Image 1 (cartoon, rainbow, N blue to C red):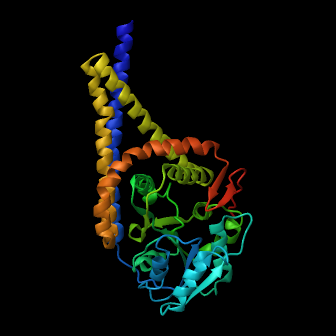
Image 2: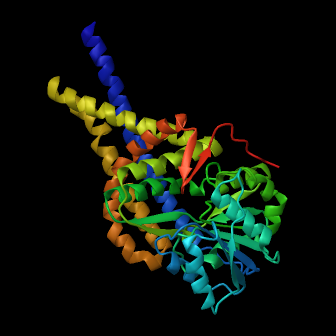
Image 3: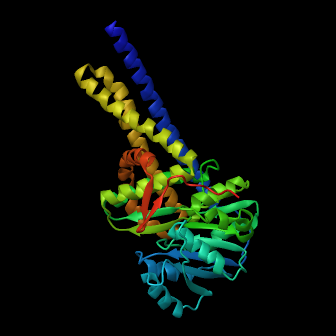
Length: 403
């Protein structure tokens, strides 16, 4: 009886090893497909759509490269836009920085506003609502960018052009972190892992740090009602757009970059858990996808370690499934990470040298991402409150408005 059980166990583990290798190869195929989609998106024919745009940047605190990022907003190659910078409070350090820059501004019209506090919404959402309420109202398109985002001069033109098609709900870029220090590199790899789903209409969303929508679309989905009690700007917007039948168009060339210094492991875990908890609250389908994918990866890795030990203890035959469960998926994962990095290097040619310096380090940091993600998924299940930029927000009984 015991030999039979051992044979069944061996065959089962061997089968799981084959499945793990096939899954890794399929992920490599998806990486190649993603690279092709990026090429096609970058090379698409432009519409020549240049309506008047209101470009909104919410700010809180003196972000790294803040002055440089604000200056970049005023030097875009877009012919018809104005800028609205919204500070979190009158005594926020950003006010002095922005005022100094705007006094010297010889570019587009620009104004500095102070956010009207909203007790039921997050600080960022309050800033966006303030911009919508106090803007002159002559914009055809509203674009939004984070204050820690470094953008190319063509960023706004690329982001707005596809909105010539009024059936598109939103256009969006994504974020790429250029990191210094080990845990910052892990943060970069963690963030980049989500980029593969941005072409998938089932899971993607308009990322709030680089997105644009028609003003009439915002009115149609009643964004002021949607954001009235919202903690997340982009994921609640995603729900409203989907409720009205809109899709989001991902534009990899509109990805913004953020330069970070080394962060502590505890800060990384806190940041990533907050992101995961918000996703669980506002985009459960995406959270479920991550749960299934990383549970499978981590479980097969643990099983691989067990079979490796059995190879030393019970016989070399166990090294066959161990090889299928451990080195092959890991090596394919490193290769996929490297492909992703070179793909974004193509999408953002102005950052080519930065990508060359960071690709190898990011590929190795990618090996830790599944375990960070597993921690965040487990932690997010019991997370009822998050702290974000000095404020606490409750996730209990969140009501999501879909007017």
